[in-house]
Image (cartoon, rainbow, N blue to C red; front, side):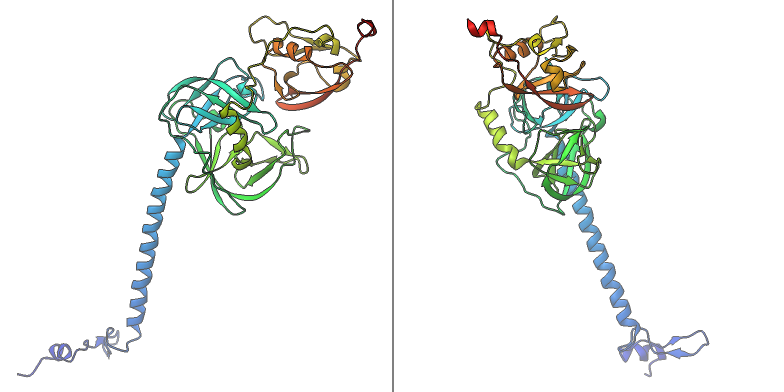
Length: 382
């Protein structure tokens, strides 16, 4: 039986002719050797590649969101002293033990009788200062906790220029309870020695830092962790600083690897807690704030901050540059939490010598060198 025309085309293994707009015919679009067949095959391959890439992006996005949530659970909000202009009463920290040890930046916020730590789930704890390193500008707090998610300081990651990072912080204090802290994406631009200042004064920290291409150093951000995309700890956000060379604000983080040994010493009890000053009685040849021309605010409460009420003209304090309204933070690197402790430290100072005085002025830390007066002749003769 003769085949009809369409059947004959099917029987021959080729497609029937395709009618063009003029009613004519052209070879089948799927016929072997047709130029349209490779184009269709290429389109299918491209669509398949795009679909695979989209699925990979979706999976990667899900993974990074899970990683961010896991890291946010290790970050805490810290509340303490401050509240005045340019002196925020909050900052950031992160857990470094399951028992409630917190690593953060050393700042005026911690100079308080009560420092509150708020966890990611909203729980609040009163913490105590275990120890601090004023040169590295870090501090370790402790509150009573157990089975807490935390970073392991024995397992750190390094970064180099081009490394993609995530910076976690309670910038501007936007998170107060169980709200998650803010996360900013960025890239490490460089690792360089710090050359910066607060106002016109140099920072005490002089180690290497990571310069970040994200605006990370905001009020409240100090002490926040910086991780790579895998959630590995890389650095800690430092306090707000301006470049000493360009006068621009620096977005930087302090690498954890040079900080970890100091943290280990503090946790091991090898570093003396800065709040645990040993009371000493004033020796006969010791110094008094008045010997230096310093008049402090009245010591009326248990922890009266060491604010300067007056500086006598032509006194050692005046020559060193101390000003009325300065808050004395450190004497030769030792913490000054109160007027009482300042008097105890000065009582141990030597005559005809010098010591470093670190004060807080207009939101900036200022380091001064004070030359102590010689021992009065009457006491030398005695």
